[in-house]
Image 1 (cartoon, helix red, strand yellow):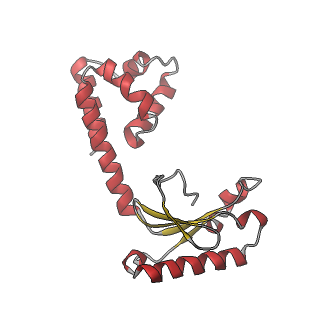
Image 2 (image 1 turned 30 degrees about the horizontal axis):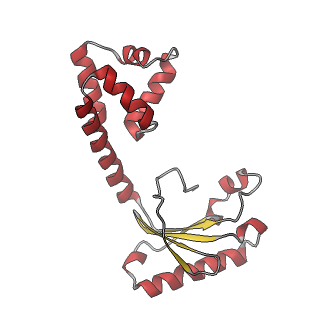
Length: 184
């Protein structure tokens, strides 16, 4: 059950509004386009920074809306955490051209890891990812492949960056979001 969807549907019903009315009050002329954007917001929290304030004004209960958004974000995080599998993200030194090469060959930049790797001793984990990175670089010696290193995504919310020599640079401060950084 999506708490944000439930909140919006109940609030619209209480105000006697339809979704199309909401779309028009949000300032859209193309109602179908607006409803697609609203559905993406409800399902994925897409464009939340722009849509949340609009809905707060139109629906009238900002605190309840913010709570529903928070609950939806927690739900999305739980789902992403449950789906997460460890992987190695290769960081090319430049964007490949044409870009469709990356889309057709995600296995060159996103390497799956054993699901239990995070439970291994850290030295063994690091040896494994360094070896995998070197093997990948030898197997696919394209110019852009020998880049700035790799990110070891060992657990949801826990990623480490390594340089091209396999030296640990530190924790990655930018979170991985499903569908944003990973190509595969």
